[in-house]
Amino acid sequence: MKKRYASTWESLKEHQVPQWYEDGKFGIFIHWGLYSVPAFAPQTWELGEVPPDETWFSNNPYAEWYYNSIHVGYGPSYDYHVKKYGKDFKYEQFADMWKAEKWNPAEWARLFKKAGAEYVVLTTKHHDGFCLFPSKYTDYNASKRGPQRDIVGDLTDAVRGENLRMGLYYSGIVDWTFADDPILNNDDLFHTASPTFAYADYAYNQSMELIDRYAPSVFWNDIGWPRQGEHNLPYLLSHYYNTVEDGVVNDRFNDLYYDFTTKEYQSGSANRREKWEMCRGMGLSFGYNAMESDDKIISIEDAISLLVSTVANNGNLLLNIGPRADGTIPEEQEKRLLAIGEWLGVNGEAIYGSRCSSRESIKYTDQIQVHFTERDGALYVLIDAKGKSQVSVTVPGLSGNAVPLDPKVEADTAKIDGGLRFTVKNFGDSQNVAVFRLNRIM
Ligand SMILES: C[C@@H]1N[C@H](CNC(=O)c2cc3ccccc3o2)[C@@H](O)[C@H](O)[C@@H]1O
Image (cartoon, rainbow, N blue to C red; front, side, top):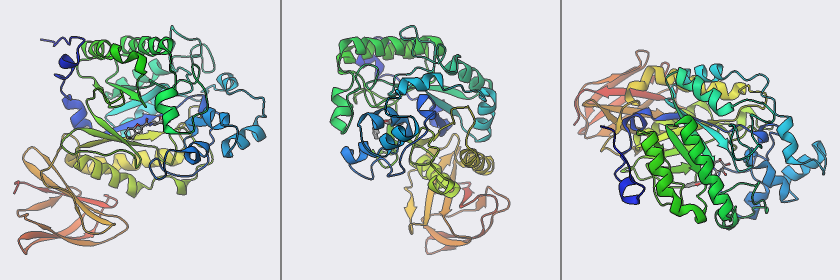
């Protein structure tokens, strides 16, 4: 019997995080849009490394913030824009330059499947207000301009064709086609952005449009929700759950309600007793930054470490790709996705469908950490030895027969000092994380 949600906070709070989201663990975030045409941002900091003040916003590493970065009227993006396009070139002109001429959504979906992702989240409207779907509420959209197609619909079909879940990102409170005073600090971001009732209705109507057209498995709102529209949220979210029973929403609705909390780069905190999700770009940006070179994007080792440490602490990893304007995925990003997929192909048993263990992760050194997951009565020990070819660690309070999941891992285990000593001599195909299964939970 399908549960019906009433449009009340009490009814919404009965919603449980669905098993697919608990089990899925790994998603692909996609930031694609007009900002992918200029594809420029200075390579400065990770979010959370420096305070979100004028220095951050006028040297914003997020290439998808290009509109705001040129509107502050100074800084690296402004200088780049004037030099490359000229002072009078309007951001909106990118709408007729974005062709996506080499885009093959089925190819993207096959890559995400090979990467071992269980879900995908695509930007439908980012802060610049340009919509990647045929919205009834604006012609500033990809079916009328640029690509002249329903990007959201075409990718949704391809992703579902690979039996992956499709999620949709929506920029709820910031839309620079409604309010585009330059944003130079977080107050501007959360309070003065898009302050009208008209915009609140627009955001509500477009969100309803997205739910009714695509029935997304994730409704991923960003930054916040228009204050003037907070009273509409119980209607919107109950409609969402009544349309997509096993749908999930994040915690960026002014902290009024969530299925899972979020972190972004170094910003935000996670509580392992609740479901949470870590999101980040491959480099410092979500949108494609043509200036970004291979050395500036996350290493394969660090990506696998991030996935393992996130999952072991009750999180999902939503790792972003920033495709080029033509629809191709930069090789250095594809390489990371395929390497993660290979690692999951060998060690996924300890990840998919697992639950976080009562055993907390152990940090021996910055390079050497041991994480734990549990599944079907087995305990998994995930030894992360970044940059090492061999490692020996004793895990206290463990006993039993530890079997490496990767047959190419060469390792010994021995009972010692009330614990189990693992000596890994060869990490086989498992990059920097060797995974062992213990068939009884101690
Ligand atoms: C996925 C990225 N989100 C950026 C906005 N970030 C946030 O609103 C934010 C970041 C964050 C960190 C911890 C808890 C809540 C949080 O909200 C947004 O400005 C970027 O362009 C990109 O779309």
